[in-house]
Length: 393
Image 1: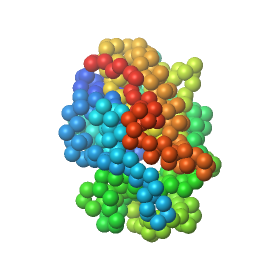
Image 2: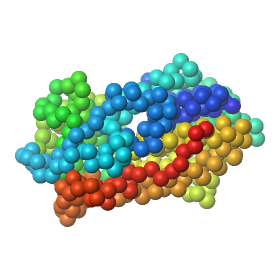
Image 3: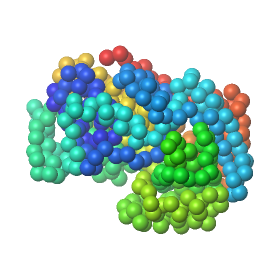
Image 4: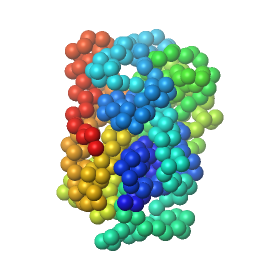
């Protein structure tokens, strides 16, 4: 079975790995000229770690990742207001919780398929035409090819979803936030193995010190404007307007904007109607953020993408060529699980950038109590749990 996968992020290469493992022939097409290295720090836990373990990735993830020890919330002068040991998060995930840059995880997965799976960089799908026996695909480069199936693993702004299912506006639920992230070298001060958060009403900056004298920053801020800001300079200007008068280290952090690769996007979910063939139309299906983006607020998008890819590949193997049955099984296993995760993300919004003074106070009080096991379980336990059974395909 020849399967074209659009997207070389997390979901696409994971799917390619498992399709090849099961004897199929995946091809990846990626818009970018090379593997993307940007992004932000992700917290990786639950079934995502289990899938990574089945791929032999766990030792490398542990080597590249970080076991965070503390979370500190500081005031305008940098004095700690709230803090708790991060072992509260480790405890509610039964010890399976690690943090690492999203780009590092993507690189680790891609290394498992590099040289084994055909990968086309600097190109994109321009047209999809389905027949009873195949999918005819045209590319921006002018190339045209035939595949048995096409899978959109191309993220929140999926080209495959737009071509086959319709415009993004039909499926996107904008959550009222924008996010930006970048990485710098030789920043001071450093707080090893600590998330340092500076929060004002409607916005937050997170600082995390990494190996090799690198530091990553994540900005989250409330913004009702749905329209994208595509120009990088306009993105930098927006961050300076929003955070330029903020306290703590914000003025010094913003000085470094011009010398870095900036990740910038709106915070949204993708919700597709189950009554309209959820994620699937004919020989085309979607996985990861293209199908059911939970948003950055959920903190688990990469892990969920890996779980979805594993299930889809496994069901295609079990169905022995009956892709309709495989797609149906994939949806049946994954849909209830992902809908719960999307609801959890909505509950987490006020943890990132509370939109009122009252919400900010409540958030801080809850975090202060996270040292108490039953409070941690009540606050985040149900949202971190993965209530799904994943077969051994």
